[in-house]
Image (cartoon, rainbow, N blue to C red; front, top):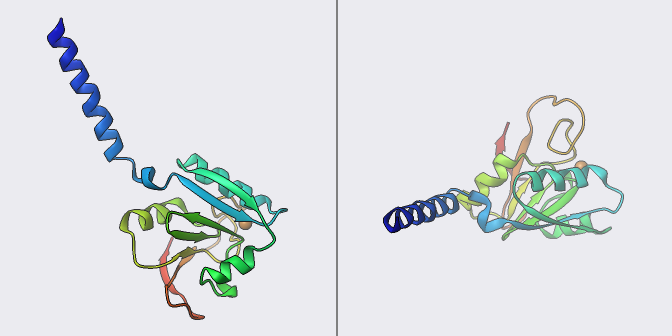
Length: 151
Ligand SMILES: [Cu+2]
C-alpha cells in the first residue's frame, strides 16, 4: 500500500515538472496592453492573448502613438495598440506563434510589430488577404525596420 502511494506521488511530481518545463509562456504570463479608449479590435487582441495563456491588463490611453514612437516604432510601422511582454514590446495584431518564438529565442531587439490592422489578423475581422509581415524593432532606432517574419 505504502509503496504504491510513493510510486504514485513520484509519478505526479514528475508530471508536474514535465508540465512546467513544457509551458513556454510561463515566464511571460503577465502582460499590459495599451490601447486608445474606443478601440474594439484591441480588446479582441487582448482576448486572443488570454486564450493563449497570458494574463492581460488593458490600459486605455490616448498616448498609444506617442508610446509606440518612444518604443522605437516609426509611425508607418505602428500597430493599433501596444503590448508590454517581459522586456519586449509587441505592437498590433501579431500572431501568437511569432510572439512565443520571440519570447523563447529572446533576440536582442526591443520587440516586434505588425503595422496597421490587417484584415484577418488575430483580433481583426474579415478574410486574410496576402501575407502578414511582422517587423523587428531594433534597439538603435531609425526609420526602416527589418523583417522579423511573415506568414
Ligand atoms: Cu486593431
